[in-house]
Amino acid sequence: MKETEIINMLRRENDEFRKVEEEHRRLDKDLDEMNRKKYLTPDEEMEKKNMQKQKLQYKDRMAQLIREYQH
Image 1 (cartoon, rainbow, N blue to C red):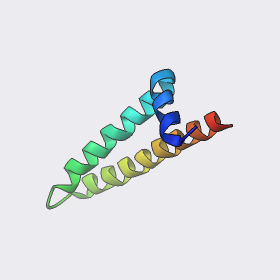
Image 2: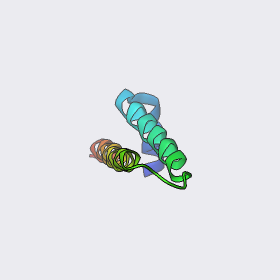
Image 3: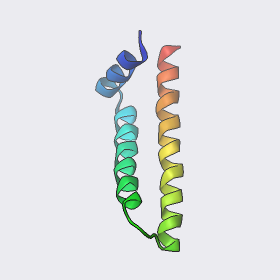
């Protein structure tokens, strides 16, 4: 089974995968909005870094769920 097929199946059948993917997309959208600003305050910079870390954690979790399904 190809990875894209696994992802589609997980989207349909795995609540955790759907939630993690949804949060990943939300953070991606929020980071895009932040990146459009010309200047970020120090607090916004810290928030941006935290959002980037969290987004990476979600991406890693999705990859882990895909690997678990493959095995």
